[in-house]
Structures are given as C-alpha cells and as structure tokens.
Image (cartoon, rainbow, N blue to C red; front, top):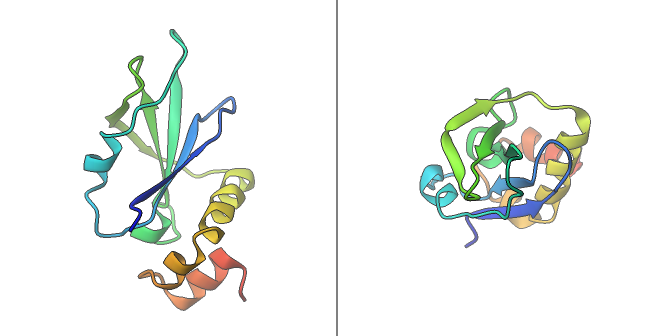
Amino acid sequence: MEKLYVNMLNDSKYIALITVLDYEILLSKYLKQITFETPPNKLKRVLVDLALKSGIDQYRFVEFEVNELGKIELKSHKYVLLNAFYENLANKFLKEKKEIVLNSILTESQKNKLLDLS
C-alpha cells in the first residue's frame, strides 16, 4: 500500500503537496527519504496533508522547509491554516485515492466532507 502521495506544485509558496495515506506510519521516516530538485539560494517549502492521520482540524496541514540539498528539514515543521485553494487541492488529491479515504480512520462525516458525498 502507498504510504505517501507526492504531488508537485511548483507555485510561489510550495514545491509539493504530500498527502499521507497511511495513519500508522512514522512520518519522519518517510519524509527523510524524499528529495526534491531545488534552485540554489531560494527558500522552498513543502506542504504535508495529515487528514488521514490526524483528521480534518487545525492540525491537518504541516509546512516544512526544503534545504539546498532538496531534503525536508524535519525540525522546521509548522502547523498552518490554509486558504481554500490549497484545501480544495488537497481534497482533490484525496478524491483520487477514494478507496483509501473510505477505509480510513476518519469519521463518516469527515469522509463525506473530503469526498463531497454529503
């Protein structure tokens, strides 16, 4: 089973949106394995969606800095509240993994909200 779903964004704020697909994983172990191509001297960040791990609340999204080697700086984590654009984008990616969402630990109302089933 897939553990993470990495979606490249390359917008002005984030280079990728990483969706956690397995609530049982040790997230830091998997994030350490990812490497991104980053332009030198430019601060880049990734956004991690923890909806399937922690639910749909203020702890859903975590932002991490990416260093000059393209590695995620785990100590740079910061929970963030996002605008509707990123939340809708994250929900779109989760809809592509509908079976995983339906079999997740989320409540039925949270599953319905993510998948627009209500």
